[in-house]
Amino acid sequence: MYCGALARRILLFTLYVAISLLTRGPFIPVEILDMDEAAHAVGSWTWMNGGMLYEDFINNKPPLLYVYYAFAQLLFGKGLLAVHWMTALLVVPLTAFAVSAFFDHEKTGIYAGLLYLLSSTSFLAHDMQSTNAEILMVLPGAWAVVLIRKAEMSRSRVRMFFAGMLFGIGFLFKYQIALGILAVGVAVMKQAGGLRPIMQAGRLRSILLRSLVWLLLGFLIPPGITVLIFYFARGAQGLFYWLFWNNLLYSANPISWWEGTGRAATYLLPFLLVSLPLWWFWLRSRKLFDDYRRALTTGLVLVSIPPLFVGFRFYPHYFIQLYFPLIIAAASGIVQSVHRRAIVAYSVALCLLCTAVNVYLYYGNNNVYRERDPIYRKVAERLKGDPCYRGGTLFVWGYAPAFYYYAGLDPASRFVVMGQARLTGYVSGNLGSLSRPSQSGVPLHWKWLFSDLEKNQATYILDTAPAGIYRWNHFPLEKFPRLQNYVAENFERLDVVEDVVIYRRRQCSSEKEGSLGSSFTSSGVQGKQTLNFSARD
Image (cartoon, rainbow, N blue to C red; front, side, top):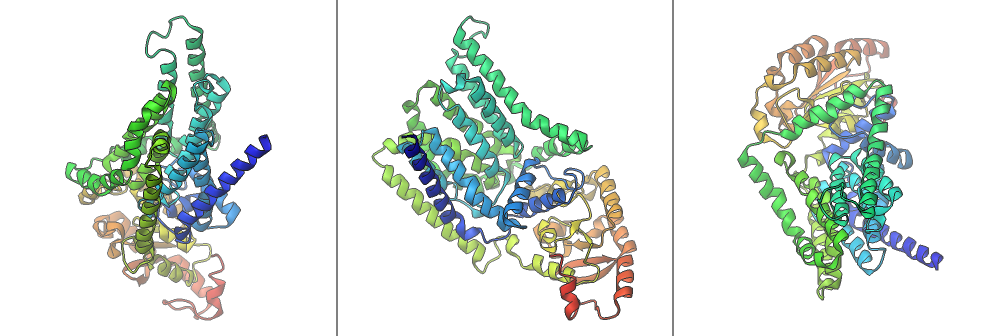
């Protein structure tokens, strides 16, 4: 009997893998779905090459994200295609399997897992199909909930401890998954008689309160180990500075009311319309659960809502965390409804429609997504054809991590992700920040930038301002005299590729061109020598 149940579950997981590949397959070959992916890949390379996260590469994302990217590339080869494959083959199906496990893989669970696979791809592929921190944090968070999905399970210290550890692991992908602990706490307190005085006698109350302590203890272990690792590696200061202090400033995002409202109308409202059936059946399904499960699922939905409003950016990948709680909260009502087949048909149709639209957006002859712009590859090829390429380093003035990704050069500075750099007044997702004066930059960060450029002897600097990539035309070099003077004193203009200006360190050009002869020209390398200097890629 056990073997039969195991075989059934293996078959179910295989089915989920097949559906995941079917729904995500068209976008796996798109090398960079979202610019954040390029930044994450560069961060993983920095770490794999012995660099220190938050010292040699900075971003506001927790460290496990880069570990995941590195692990995927160790399994499937270097590059983002490896990451896409691992996400489609393992992360998404395992999350759908957790949805099914919440209902013990019975009929409701099978339906729920299927709905997760369909619904989680039914919006913009730019966010839903890319491997971002949100899609990764949901996996351990979902299995944490599965561990304590029933009232009697929440009384087990072991289950609560490991559920806490899973929430802690999810926290190391992105922070908001930890809010699930609040939902668990409310559900447990519901069993214990609500918010009556905690000192009231009662064995059940004592057991439940102790289980919450074990939940919190388990949660603290993964972040605690991470802090110790960075402390002994002498990187704790950078860890806390970028993940907490700088991230708080980024999250504050002083956006205008008009812009925030516009972003909500552009992203949040369409998402609510697309997911409307799930919200409807969530409200209708609440009476189908016992008190514990009702409190747990309701709490999970409610704690997933506030993170949508952080900074009022309403990036669609912020919505990913809602799918798991919404589907487990709505699934019972959907399966018991006489319209369940219509709901599944609606989900399939919506998935097909969104897939068709997204295929057009990424493969059609349009300029909707800047990630598809051939400029990144063109500049990379120009750099690879230069005699100074081998062993060189690169700094990009602008928000364009794809240049680092395609060029394959080590970053000459920790500031790869300009949205987090605070070298200018620019803040991602805030058009109003484009008009802030250059003095809005943090002086300490400028000090770090020039220190990095000298320490790593930057070989190339790309100026993306003339090309206006991601509105960087608002930050031309002449607005930053110190950087402009540094470039003028130490670099020469090598080439201009579709308005991206390439500067090369003078010392590098004199040494390498002198030693390699005169066969190299300012336009590139001829003959076999081109292959020799492209070998790094």
